[in-house]
Image 1 (cartoon, rainbow, N blue to C red):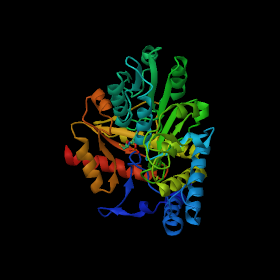
Image 2: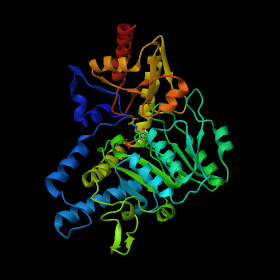
Image 3: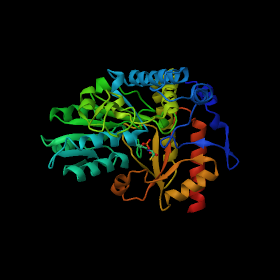
Image 4: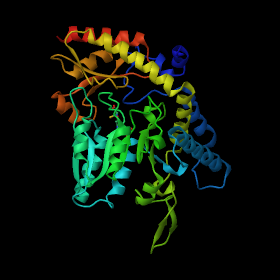
Length: 404
Ligand code: C6P
């Protein structure tokens, strides 16, 4: 039995009220909530060993450095990277993607092709468009079907010796579709190109093995994995990270500086200029410990039960349409009520203490595909319950009545 009651007690925020009603937090796709075990680590850092890292010989600095590097090793183990220096600490998924895009500017030439998928978040589209503007490379798009799945036959046709890079998310934030990344990586490598997988939405639900996937780059954000905001990771194969130039110049990323010439530090520091989010990095490690103590397999099994329960109940509401109906999906339900704007539904749900996201979810091309302005998105985490699903369903019915 999944220990849901015990787990909920770990999250102080889940016992608060919103507009006088118990909070039903179903916006986990935007950011997850933080367990007390992670909050305690943050309080401990600022109470006991707040100091800059990799710089001082004093005790506090050494303690902070040890904990920060310990967190890097936890991330390495979690993603099964071969080396700890293949884990670059960043401010999150967006920065990780921009770091790689910046690096490829010096490796691409006019006429090279890069491929993204129709299911991408804006942060996995815009940096590549900027890269194309800079280099003259051409952006191609893997199309999607009505169920919100990628059309792999079309992907096969896009691949050629001109392809240099492919970018795809592991799980779509707007629809919940789990993409067949293993197959995409294998096919891409057959033409000699590299693959970046955006794991922002996958990492709260499953445990990617970067070596088994043979992926070139994998990126994620701590705040979607029960960690704090402002910290994330980039995994890159050692050979790629050695090939890419530094992203930002500054302290910590250098070996030697003179006014004539600067040489760069070894990995991972070459990509980590300036004082990082030290506390955030340490807390990211604690969040990974927390998720692993429950077990990602147990989490995904429980969330799948919630998804099936919620899908069945929500579909009983007349005039409601779900977007994203792939069999292979995670615990996200994106929907609209016929003739009603998603924003209005979200506002009424909020008055009942129910937090959902409304709008285009930073995926305007998906909304354009369905010819809708946006959706209401309920995204469930392992600390949600079937009772909360019931509250959501009643809330949607009420919203429908009020808005029809
Ligand atoms: N999606 C959502 O509500 P950052 O902001 O850097 O931590 O993550 C960006 C990002 C990149 N890729 C995917 C697939 C994502 O889902 C997100 C963030 C949130 O869906 C906020 S827009």
